[in-house]
Length: 148
Image (tube, rainbow, N blue to C red; front, side):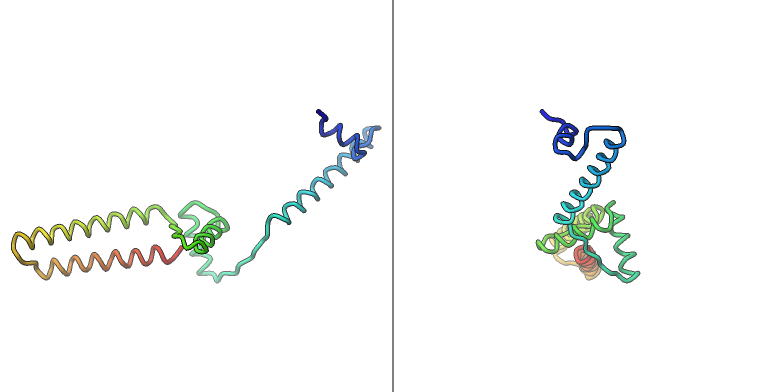
């Protein structure tokens, strides 16, 4: 099997000869290699620039930092999840918080059901407390899932 340098000598990119000729050949090869890589990169990648106001940029940095990602990676994931109508969850702690709130509401509903079955009535304060918990969880869900 032919090595890279054997191929370069055979094709004339690296000349046989003095040390200076060999070094010039290597420089020429590096230049050609770099140009080929740049062409390949330009054909497979496209750069897109976005402009944010300061408030938006700070928010983006905070959100990306929460999930330990760079801004471009975070934006790319958010855009692709939006395009696919998928939910992009910015932080696992939000899911845990939602899970805990749902459990609390479930406990309250169980307590209401227990008191209703035992006393055959439910106090207004218990209904109000449950409604408050439901409103709180609704706000948390709306905030968590509407902002990437």
